[in-house]
Image 1: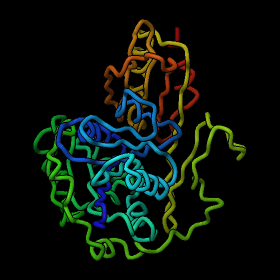
Image 2: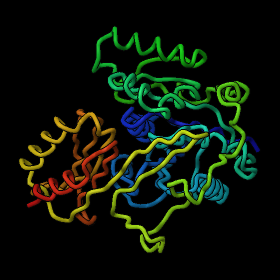
Image 3: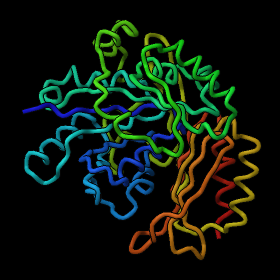
Image 4: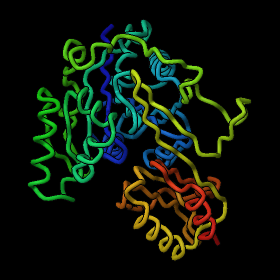
Length: 355
């Protein structure tokens, strides 16, 4: 039986991965693709952005795609998908995996070489990395993960090119070419890209990756008891002694390097006053925008029968109407990801904007 090709979609927070996934899931391209989307933090906000009409874990789209919102271990998600495919419950010919925006895609790629069961069903086709034209240089300067994402890429797309001038795009492309001379680089807008530029690239050459990282096929040798991040998915009833509603600090360790990024969640079943919320967010972005790497959420707005989707990176924020609330519980869930963010100020301020 032919192996199922897998594409890893990488890129730092806010680079446009969700927009590209939405394009894949909703365009009538005739391909049968399973998308595994994975988000940093405890709330699966992307399910409301990508699949606005269902709360199921595996959703079949009208164009033949499958959206898998299983959270937790990647190996389990892949094997569960394959088992359902074998049982003819779902159909797909290839898989796209969205990595978290703060992740080195290397360990994800390791999965296809280190786990025998996964390797017997799937083959890694390529790593595709998105780089934000407006914030890419700053992210590459400050975040080792952003550099790793570029270094592992088989193809690079520069996104949001309409927000900067041609000189800035050219300079970023020149920098990326020097960081990874083997990956073709092109620009895309609003996630609209021909899928033949993303799929079936046959670009993942293991030897090239070993040159970039000689430890690629070695297991991470840090202490899992004290590394500061979870290796298993926790449910709301777990007894690990931590509060799922509090800010959590995730540490990504690599041979002596530690990078800490905080994530916290705002929840409320009371509606927002639109004007108060707009005024508060405008002030917060003007003061703390540079520290706000990524924020996204589903908002419950007074008088609006539909969900309001909010997404942003740094000072740039956008909103869009989502699906009708229908029988869904009306509540706001907002995820903030950043460095040294004043959690109490943000959460307390949002509380004052509620009706």
